Length: 216
Length: 216
Figure 1: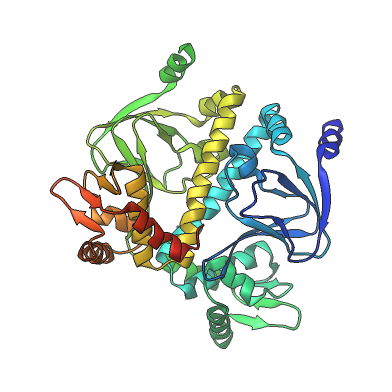
Figure 2: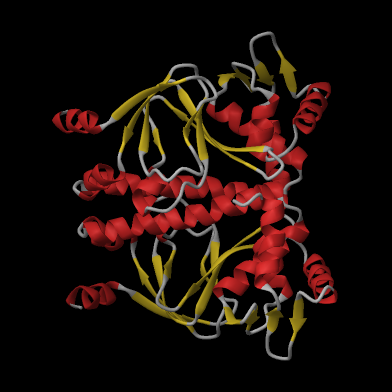
């Protein structure tokens, strides 16, 4: 706790409006951003301006450690998703000292980087081997498993995911997401309720995904 | 040096034939593999059997640290690319002890994981925003910069890269690679010599890649 208070004192605190950028891909800062309140999203943009999103960072988590650790430029931008997102920024040097001084923390950091690398590897495999339709199926399955409330064979995903968010997650267009969800609804696998998107048979969706993915 | 000898004594040594698998995606081992002689390649396969390759590991480098660090399953397979590749395998526990006991080593490991994550992020962006043609251009540019011998505006890449290797690196087909290289040859940007592939104007190739990528 003393340690934590000491770290908190070294931080620069700032609140961000919704959609405001807290880490700029092109800025030369290496600060780590601790999300104290709200939520943030790691994103990058194509030359054509299309948004590719990587992952969301919730309150209690942090983001931006790569530049702090290796001193190289930012690999992406980070924007506040919730209004009034409160961030505590820690400069690279105290962050590295904290880690170098605590072997357990260093091991946790390595496991965290491994986890990100596994997610990235899965995404590369999906982009390399699955069509856009199947990638939407795979993302829906991830949402059902991570954010869904189980109800027998079904999973209730609330709030209803935004089409453009799914599109940015699997690198496709909003139109494709809309079409795939409408096809799944027609087939009875998905049902749109006023406050939730219901995957009516998670096991069947999983089979559909595993069939094309080859059980990886 | 004493340290190094102590680690070497804890290793299990084995030689592998060309194309032999030294780390199996589906096996439950967490050993780290040090490439003592030869070369290895990190690969994964789609349901249809298509090979997606990640990176090559040269003598003096190691691979397989993720499962050793986080105890989770293998994210890919590793095969020997050179005949008689000599591997020293170190079990997860001594590997983790080595790292936990040496803060400098831990920081190096984190920078290494960050580097892999940056390469993966770039590849996700390329797969998400570039067509197959442009991805072949981007890979050719990487080869010119990393493996090419500079000669004025040109870069000599030797040995000549194999079409199927480029295809596996950028997740496309051999036929697409052959067609793109033939187009570049017709345009005078690439020239095939008996012992090298020559990129005649690296700056112009770089412009072509940056134009579609948006300067990332």
